[in-house]
Amino acid sequence: MGSLNKADQAERGGCSCVREIRFGWCISFAIPLDIGSPPFNCFRLLATLAQIVREGQETRGRGFGCIGALWCGRHEAANVGQQRARSSKTQAGRNPEMAMIDHTRTGKGVPPFVFVHGFGCARSDWDAQVAHLAPKHETVAVDLGGHGTTPGTLEHARIETHGQDVAALLDHLQLPPAILVGHSMGCRVVMEAALATPGRVAGLVLVDGSRLGNAGSTVHETTKKQIAEVGYQAFVGPLFVAMFSPAYDKAKAQPIIDRALARRPEIAGALFPDIGRWDAEKMDAALERLRVPMLVIQSTYQDEKRQRRSLEPGQSSPYIDLIRARVPKAQVEVVPNVGHFPQLETPGTVNAALERFAAGLR
Image 1 (cartoon, rainbow, N blue to C red):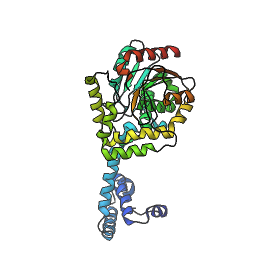
Image 2 (cartoon, rainbow, N blue to C red):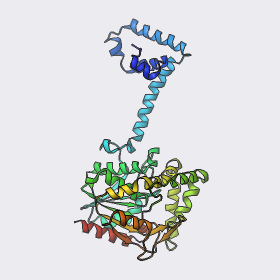
Image 3 (cartoon, helix red, strand yellow):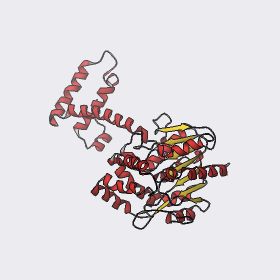
């Protein structure tokens, strides 16, 4: 007891401290097996403990410290694992009993709609659409990890994690094939979710999406450095101010800007450049792999200086051209002369487009 076999010694480099750690694990959980069934062999137990003390002295008294560190470390790891359970829903291991991202479910009717907000946003961005569609369709509006009321971890600094979370929610709710509606960053998230669980998806709606990095681009690394230099709020604030058209009520826009600025910088500051990373690495392949009907509702584009501009009637953009090239059957509807949140600035137009799209799937 307390000794390492040759394979363990090779793996651990023969360190006596590791031997004590292994014994510490056994003594915490397996004394009845190793010492003997009650009554315990006290002499053997004492002899073994004495051996650990001697070896602990040879390693500068670290023996019992290692045992304690292991015991505490195991429990700390368990706590971290529980904390991360919300975001660890991989394709191979989605568990319906795990905590789901926060969401609001209402209405009845098929196909259901699942609404996914954009970067720094929340499910309330879709309130007008939920209210309009709920009489005829079941609706689910989510708060992604680190947004709204859903707690976030550092894993939520990657688009893939959000896609896995949405896919896990679809599995958990056991919805019939649904229309996934994503706004901005949420366009990437719904594509990830659709690829992860295609049987639960009837169609995709991409609301004012974009591409922040062409294939092979490393512009996201530059963005990451910029955020590190100026700080999260200084970087994100001007971007959100520019997301609204001059005609939109500033009293309504300001809470949305403030909400984005209130995100945890360690998560949101890493997530924003990850949008460009996903675009460069995955967007082309994702668009080509998707096999469901698609509607693009586009209201803005970003010029060569990354300044956001409203589209004019009939105008195209590099993003619209990309969608048409990769998904020739995609429907495209331009919502002119508004900002980046058409679902807020012109909810009636967006609601009507969603209704037409759903009707076409029947």
